[in-house]
Image (cartoon, rainbow, N blue to C red; front, side, top):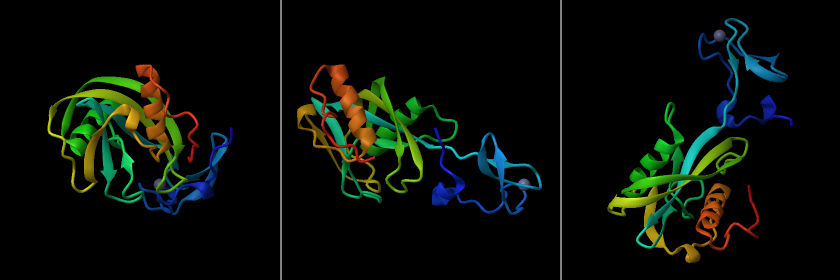
Amino acid sequence: MSLPTIDAYPDTYQFRFCPLDGTPLERMPRHGQERLGCPSCGWVFYPNPNIAATVVVEYQGGIVLLKRNIPPDRGIWHLPIGHAEFGEDPADTAIREVQEETGLDVTDLRFLEYEHSPGYGDPRMFYIVFCFAARAVSGTLGGDATEVSAARVVPLEEVPELKWSSQRKALAAYCRQQGTADRGQGIEDRG
Ligand SMILES: [Zn+2]
């Protein structure tokens, strides 16, 4: 398979100077690809995907949906989701993001599936999203007012079509695990 070229890197990866010594970067072949590298110290940029975790949270007979309050895609409903910090296990990311975004503490975390796809903010950035399910055991459904404008509990069979492919994949895997109809089927994948 072919990997994205330097010109196809996302804006945030269009580096011009070496982060270690400030030398202008040059294009150079490394490991079968043209890379951005430093002719002075030998530093080479190997772009990585962003890592995130999303969670199907079981709570009060349904699952938790959040209304997004920040761009991109402000106003859509989504599952709790967030970036993994450097050094953080994605399972710990899942638990932390649920706490931050919903106010709920979860247990019984189960891995469902992963998704690799272009991001919605910049489609040249790739994301790996680890999809989990978990059960809320304490806390009060509230949510981070900065990132989330509303939170609600929806019975599984009444969950609307979710925009992000990672969320649909998580839900489809959850439905398979629960033995219910696969909501991921027949929904066009928009990325
Ligand atoms: Zn350098």
